[in-house]
Image 1 (cartoon, rainbow, N blue to C red):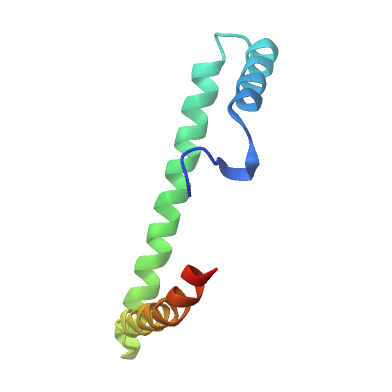
Image 2: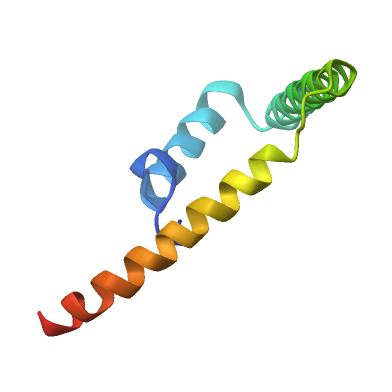
Length: 95
């Protein structure tokens, strides 16, 4: 993703306008509390996600499932991408 492109195609002016409206609605005193609450919520989501990942990994190891299979698949995908780039590279340059 490029630096100029923001998620959901929101420009800097739109973000500024949204922040201005939030400031008007909640006031300057409540914004730090809201930010703290959002930060705590995001942290809890991250911790829960990490816990789920670790549980899946532990269960897979107990069952004898090879988790390194994803690395092999990624390597195969990368090699296919390189092959496609080699084939299409000359075609792209001609146009």
